[in-house]
Structures are given as C-alpha cells and as structure tokens.
Length: 408
Image 1 (tube, rainbow, N blue to C red):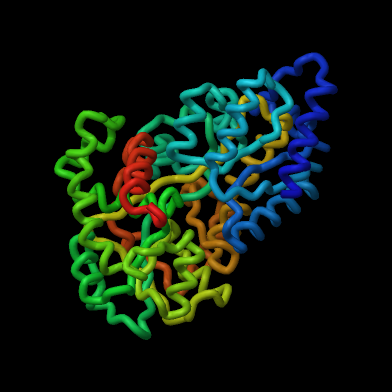
Image 2: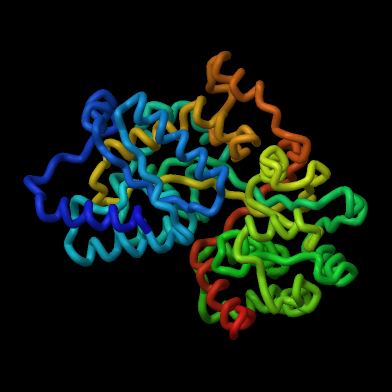
C-alpha cells in the first residue's frame, strides 16, 4: 500500500510539473541511455507472491543503484492485470507522459491487451539492448512469440517456464505417478483429496486448465487462433467434462481451492497434497534449498508434453523513467543476473540465454550451478506444448468461474 501511495503521489507531481516533451531514449545509443538513467527511479510492477523472487528483485535493485545510479522500486502485485488497468486509465485521462509505471513483469493475455491498445513503448527496443546478443532466439521460439503473438521487440525476455509436477517420494512411489491428464484423473480417483489446483484466475490455476484443454480438445490447432464464440462451448466441453469428473476427488472435494502456488506448495509440505505443480522446473529444488519442502520431494512431467512459455518485462508507452527501465531490462538478461536467477538457492528460474553465445568465463557462471536434487535435466522435461491464443485464457477463466468458483 505504501508503494501505491508513493506511485500516486509521484504521478500527481509529474503531471503538475510537466514541461516540454523529451525525446524517448534510444537503446541503440546506450551511453546516452545510461547517462539519462542515472538518478532515475524505476517503478517495477511485478508479482510479489514469492519471498525468493522478491529477494532476487531486491538484489537487482541493489546492483543497479551501485552500478548505474538507478533506483528500483518493486511495486508488488497480486494480479498483473491491475497494472494494465492503471496504464489504460492513464491513457484515457490523457497522461501520455509521466506515467506511474515504468516496467511491468508480463506475458500472455496482459501483453496481448497492452499491444492491442497501443500501451507499450517503441517496437524493437528489446532487440537493441546490448545484452540481447546473448539471448537464445534460435532455440527458444517463445522468446519472440508470446502466446501465439509476435513480440515485435515490445517486451524483453528474462525467464523461461515449463509446467512440471512434484511429489514427495517418502509418501508416493514414482511408479504410481500419472503420465498424462487421463492418468491424473485415474490417480485422483484412487487417491481422493490428494490433488488440487489454484483457483483461476490465478496464473498457475489457469495454466492447469490450458494443459487439460490441450490434452482433451479434438483439434489442438484451433487453440492457436482467437476464440470463436460460436464453437467455444463445443471445443471446451471435453475439458469441462473432465473437470466435472475430477472435482469430486480433489482436496476438500473442490469446495475450496488453494489461493496460489505458494499455498498449494505448503499443502504438499504439510502432507495434505501428494502431487502439486508449478511453471518452474527448479521450483522444488529451490523450495528444498530454502527449507520450504522436505528433501524427499522430486519432480516429474508428462511424456507427451506440458505447457511452456517465456516471461518478459515491458515498458508502458508513458513511463516516466524509460531510460532507467531500459537499464533494468538489459541487466536482467546479463549473464551475471541470469546465472544468479537460475541458482535454486536464489530462485531457480531457467535462463533465456544461449550458452554458445557466452564467453568461457560467462559459461562458468552456469556450469558452477547445482540445479538441485529435484530438478529434471533438460532432456527429461518432455516436449513443450504451445500456449493457446491469449483469448482462450480469459474465456476459460470466465467459464470456469461461472461453473466452479467457490461461492457460486
């Protein structure tokens, strides 16, 4: 709340004192960007639900202030859509400069919404960052295509994600684990109350819906296009039939759902759930390293594939500290910052960089990492399933809420 008050006060002050418009910084002239950024405060709106992630962002801020004189303020969000709403409101009010948000942690439908409404800073800024030369655009297609939409350099990648499941090997035999959605339904029936998922629109919960949709839809190719309202019910009916069969066997018989991933993970730690999942392959190892899960927890995935994507940072069109935001985005894709982020004791989030683009000393930063006892090797993660078009996520959440949400 304090951050939000500070942001509002800043916005009012900037509006009252606005002078002649300044030219936007050009990342191709990096020395000029660094000079302009010095002394700026960057308000970064980012999900604040993880102690480890918050600590990592805090470290980023310390490094940026020491190296470049840029102050970073983490405005903690529960839902990224709230930041999008703020930028929309500022545009509607005619605040084309001095916006209250300088950087947003974003992907998927939130990126699609901002791109569609012209709420993002100049195209191709991300590809002009000095550290872009390290990014693995050749082997990681989701770096340039976000939920089927070309990024057009409007957002800069800073982490990879893939849906992975976790279990406690002290309680569950590896041979009993499900290998696909159909197996999961059979397992849940045999182990009532031992599985659940966060209630949508929580991102992890909505991602579970998309995983089930991809596995049950008659033609997955239809998901790569915008929702056709005329066929939505027909296309999604197999998924909702699946959920109708699954819900009676969920934790608390689906009369309650975990709030988010940390809540679900705590249920695994407490022995109330036997299988959980996250979008970070190193999530379990990170939790073990931080004593949030027992060291008997292990990971598994579906051999047919699970959902995968990239997460990004974007700069609103009216950001007050655009130069500072560019400096933050560039630092986030530096080998040093990426290696620290991939360390399970820090976060464990996979890198967006290509190892063959790094120097020998830079590669050693990654080679020295112990990815943890619960982290699957890259060739054990299985195929990456494409994210559906962003319109599917919002419609699934609406339909799910009307059908299953607690209180309905």
